[in-house]
Image 1 (tube, one colour):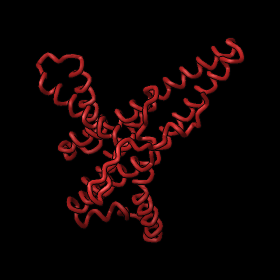
Image 2 (image 1 turned 45 degrees about the vertical axis):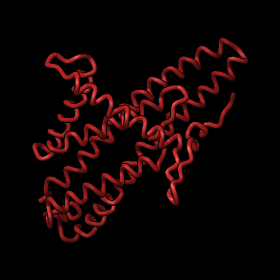
Image 3 (image 1 turned 60 degrees about the vertical axis):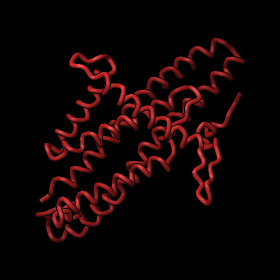
Length: 246
């Protein structure tokens, strides 16, 4: 079977739900988002209920993630960012889950849809901007106009910094979207090549299978790496809202 490479990203209607004039119909995208969220909540509650001084394997895994995120926050923001640890831990685990589910055969990758990644990026950007204004007040302006700069260079730098700040949500969402989309398309193309070469010669099948396995392992690494990059960039962006540039 030779499917279109983009068919794996099609959003399909699963259940029509229209109470009155409100459309809350379930698609494969929204269903997976809901199931993944409920699964993560269930796992968290289960680990919490079985929490022990001598941790089991699942507790060790989640504590490792927790300490990993804590170390990044400590390095980037210091004590000011400690209270945001649950937020960033949730972001990392959620993005990682979305990425890994997409690697399951016949799975659906939610982070390969720009509407999801851009919604996340814009939401976080807006929230951190509000935090910066509330926390730093007038000093927040130094994010856009660096202090102690030559007067002739200040307008250009202010323009560049402003554009850079406004594009954070776009760059954040595009980075995750593009990496997940490209990797899954490549896996699909190589999968079709395996089916085609199998009908020609078994000798040609082995090399492409090795390449496909290598790309699969690479995609696994990229899924973990993109969750890490997304989280650490959010922490760096929050740092600008917590620590003045004065």
